[in-house]
Image (cartoon, rainbow, N blue to C red):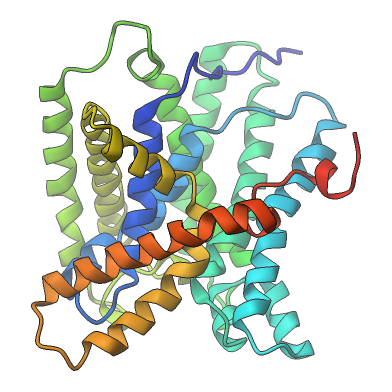
Length: 357
């Protein structure tokens, strides 16, 4: 059996990937500002979650080489994803038995019914999508030929994307957002495949980094393609919502999501060329604090929207103030959570929680 992975861990930290993760969470936060971003929400929300799943795939590595590895993998995901989800969900929800059941169901709709933080839908969806892609990756690595593994992964990812629009979506969603998790697994796979196909261009030290002009052209083409989101508004709510498998015209959704992801991916590599220490460190902190930002930002957004409603301020300025403040407050509470409540930040492994060595 061949267990050699398609993608090996890079030799050194890749700054652009930190920027990619930071851009992903910034887009997610911006897409949740309802009062002031108007049509910009239609654009950002069509690919914000996709970029996040894609960035997860870029750093994804095969961890399953034998049957016993599944135990570590699943338990680590429970501790780092599901445990913070349930705790944050209970913090925001009135604590009743019915609401705990709704939280355990794990869909965007059930979070709303539990009167909890609906943006937490991403975590059980990530858990299910991560598990599914790990299974796909394990199956791929049973194939001896690297080319055969690449063909298998590409075929499976394309097949998942083709099947998703035909899946029914229940009024309360699927448990753990399973139908959306299938879509998420495909975008995780796209990130993984991108890392494989461009590894010589992405990994530091190869001397084959992409010319900035090429990155600018990719970003421009991706941006142009992402604008097809404005043609995809004939649906309830008037915009795409991946959390509820609301895609509208599915081909337009895929075009805008792919374009937006390419735009952010290329932009991240361009921004990573800026060597200002404060700028770089700020983006690194944001990219490393996604769990806390997920959990805190909506409270800040709602508070500021209520405060700014009665003040005459341009919408663009208000949105910028809310975005910066929401991320800034999240980063301020992050050191306390990381130090004293690391489980809430998704920073713990199951062996540390249960005292195993």
